[in-house]
Image 1: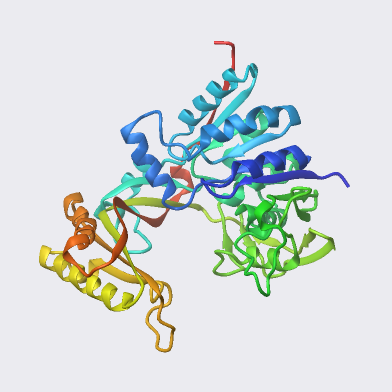
Image 2 (image 1 turned 90 degrees about the vertical axis):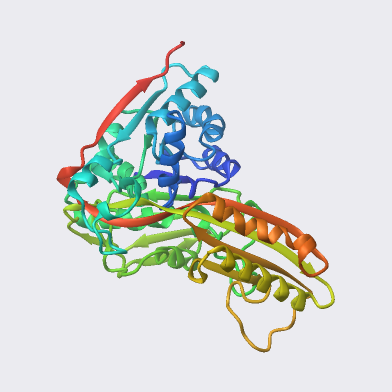
Length: 445
């Protein structure tokens, strides 16, 4: 049976570039998908774009293009990525610049625009899921709709080498090549559901090949050091086979696929995407050979009449400070430090509900519990939220002052202040979202 092969070259913005290079070299791919947007990533990219109109695309994007662009062209692999983030057009200009440096004249790059729905959200003023209030009642800084396959198809049909999008639903990046190559109807809910299952398995990169899976005990993974990136071989009926970079470490098994299938899924029978309401409840996995799992049984129902929108909402600043204590009496000393800093910040006007402190090594992950052995070394961490940067700076300053004004024997002081951008959710009518595709070709200039 004829099939198409799609590989994941990135499952988040900071993913390994060397693993993507090996995937393209060995994977016999048709498409390489670079997925790199978490919920707050795009909002932070909008802030970058405000500071510099030529920024606002994904982390390490230029480095990825230098590593992958010529290789993908030589291997006849098309790149699909949402690392355009808040500024796909600027990202396209990066690709053009890299292509010229690499003497890749004739390379064609498409941008899929329309995810930035700030003006439409302002007019529609829908309610925010998390607060129940209208969008207009929040200090929002960005609004990005999760576009889908339909918005990407014109770029695929144009035969370009690189497709750069902004906020597109993660599964849609993988599903779009399936729909295009197999000519699936946008109302073939069964096949769209099946394709979404395969897409969801691949969207988080090495999570389905042993990363984020191994525990060193019951779930052992060989050679996690060289864990490979995943590949899906997709057939026209919507079934597929999950594998990984040939010769790489890691593992693809029924168990890794089951874990990834349910990752970030609330109701497996109703997984809502822009393209289909997928049903994962009857998915079956069968290991057909080592590191090759056959996937069947997905289905779907009609898509919704709206797009989900992620709002970036300004919530002031967080100040954070760390200091470590070790040796005899470390617990008593770190508890003294904690009490001092907490009270000083309260005296400065930071409310206790906007403050969180932990003793890393004792209670930071699982809270207080009796019967745990006393650690020989422990770190005090405190973070607090404030409306202004200067008050947030105070958090790290108070921790640093423990050097000479707190218990003896501290070390390893670190302090940070950063803006707090919350990711809230709402929906917008499909008819209020207008997308378009722009194409540029690299010339000798």
